[in-house]
Length: 252
Image 1 (cartoon, rainbow, N blue to C red):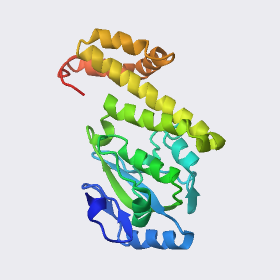
Image 2 (image 1 turned 135 degrees about the vertical axis):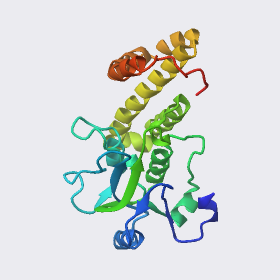
Image 3 (image 1 turned 180 degrees about the vertical axis):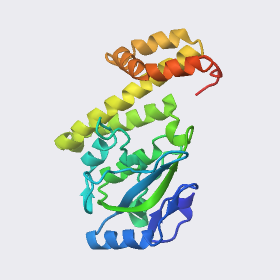
């Protein structure tokens, strides 16, 4: 709705519990004009409720303003042992409105998880020039149970389907770096999807669906096993707090 009623040259995004540093928009506009960018964003100060604030992008990964390619954007959403909390999908860029109108780009309103990642990837695949600065101009509040942390199997499946389409795109196949990054990210999303769908089926006593998910693809059972091992400590803690099946009889 905001995209439809906006009349300015730029679309600026902000969540209701977040905050801009004064002059943020002016600083990003200057970055955009100098680099003829379609998207511009800054570093984020992540502020967990009751926790210690930290930078989304550590200084060693972003020391000066730089052009962000599609391949690097995807890679920076996978995470690694050194930067487990890094996810460029959290960034809140300013986007040139004319670019969105010309390419007919909107959020996928079916998704309540990963919709920003999908929007940014759509922009990049449409040829958007994205520049980022290490300046920390956006304060991002995080809290347990927020939409950012809630992943439904439907949300994850739509992200996987988007990336599957990109992987079949001849232009993407010619971009070795982007194709490789998308394969890695899709494997991460597939693991999360199959695990979420499988555990939802178990919780709802839909055991036939659980069995079908195990054989849905050549990798599905492996993905479920891998993610189960990773989630085991969380499952144990939930069980000790009152039972893994408590309060789970609802559709997702």
